[in-house]
Amino acid sequence: MGELKKWRDQDWVRIGTDGKIKGPCGTSKDKKNPDRCLPRSKAQSLSQGQRASTAKKKKKEGGQGKTVVKNTPDAEVKLRSGGLARRRRHHKGCGAVMDDRRKKTLYV
Image 1: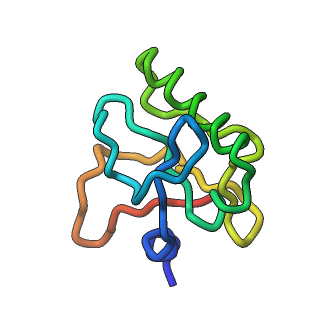
Image 2 (image 1 turned 180 degrees about the vertical axis):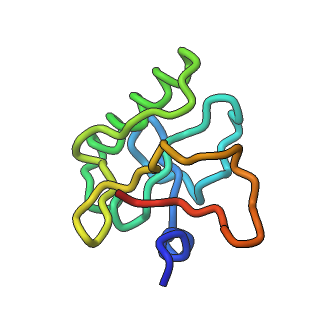
Image 3 (image 1 turned 90 degrees about the vertical axis):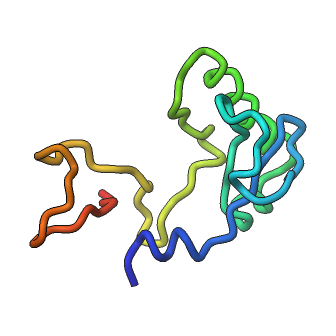
């Protein structure tokens, strides 16, 4: 099974700055500075304080104009193989889908 399919199959939830699970990911009313999202299993494994900490970090840095804000160390989402989920940045081309190639999110 592809890595993107595994990601889609996980139940991602939105975390409020109070550390509570607020609902499904993607339902934040503030579209310019959305709430932190985590897989439900990861969110439930953290304490309310740890969830609040990562959500506050996202809101603070998002308010300063950052679009990608790294999780706190406790809230890092790791793949089953043990590596961190991240994109490889050195792709060639403009990202167009060609007949013999497909866009992929690669995990290093």
